[in-house]
Length: 186
Image 1 (cartoon, rainbow, N blue to C red):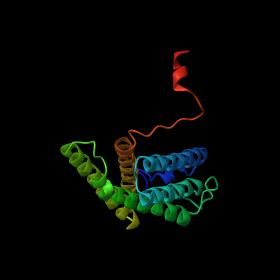
Image 2: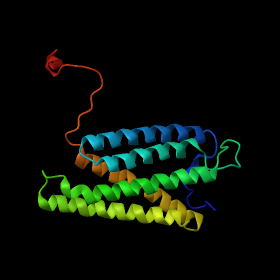
Image 3: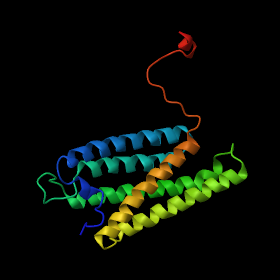
Image 4: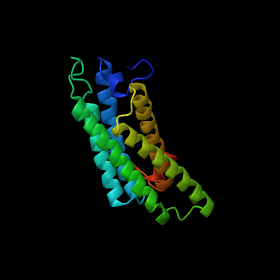
């Protein structure tokens, strides 16, 4: 059972957590999509951006469809939920791999040793996330082991994404509204 650690989705089956999770995962998926646009503006390939956007779309469905068909507060479909979760991780792993393979063409402002160190760290994160996804797809048992893999997989994706944004988007500026930088002295 879940005595040691539940899967992420099982923590959200009972109200009010099911409503909170849908709100958080839905908004997280929107932010992940925004990050894909930022990465694209920073030079990420169209294919990697597309994979990231479709992965974000799948993540939104993970949050919208609860994991349990038995609990009235959840009223979900575990098959659809799991299919979208798997699609999210597989697509994002592909994006990570593609970005890693293309990173030789970027980051010209870095020293060679700095670039190599970042590539090695990103390769480790990409490999670990891909192995975690493979373990999820293979249905690692017992449940607590599957839960550990799932929590680790999410952490790896978040860490890789954070590192990628920091490395790729240093010159990307987002502004909402209109203002004149000369008016800052008022």
